[in-house]
Structure formats: C-alpha cells, structure tokens
Length: 89
Image (cartoon, rainbow, N blue to C red; front, side, top):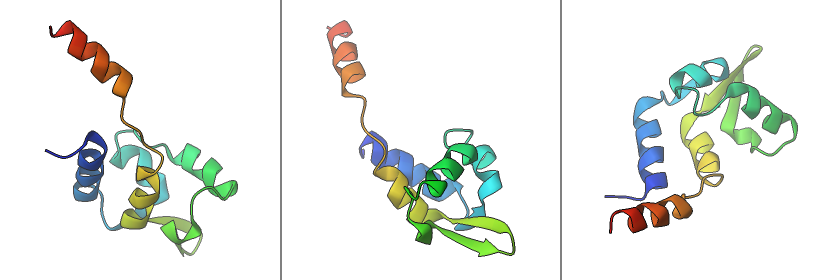
C-alpha cells in the first residue's frame, strides 16, 4: 500500500480528466480543492503557469502537471497517526 499522499494523488489521477475546466475543480474533487483558492494562488504566481492552458477565456487545468504541483503542498498527518497508535494499545 502506498503513502496516504501517493494514494490520494493516484485516486485523483484516475478520477480527473486529463484536461478540464478550472470552474469544474470544486465538483470534480468533492470540494477538496477549491477553484477560488487556486485562482488566488494563480494570481500570486504560486502555481506554475504550465499547469493551465486557455480556450478563449476559459482556463483549463492540465491534470498531471497540476497534481504534481499540488502534491508538493500536501503533508502526512503524523500527529493524528501517533494518537491513534496510543489508543489502539
């Protein structure tokens, strides 16, 4: 079994289309990733521009490049794992 982060990324890779409208991000991720927050990060140039392409005025998300960036923002919840381990004893 892979890490929690690796498994999450794999599940998103399987669930998301290769390219999709940014405005669909909330729905496609079950609001785990919010388009409004991504737009704010885009405006601050935190997210690499190659994660996005344009069709007229529509912003399209390139799944694999976006998930590669997003993976770097995630971290395992080691505190909760330690707490669970103590309660299982």
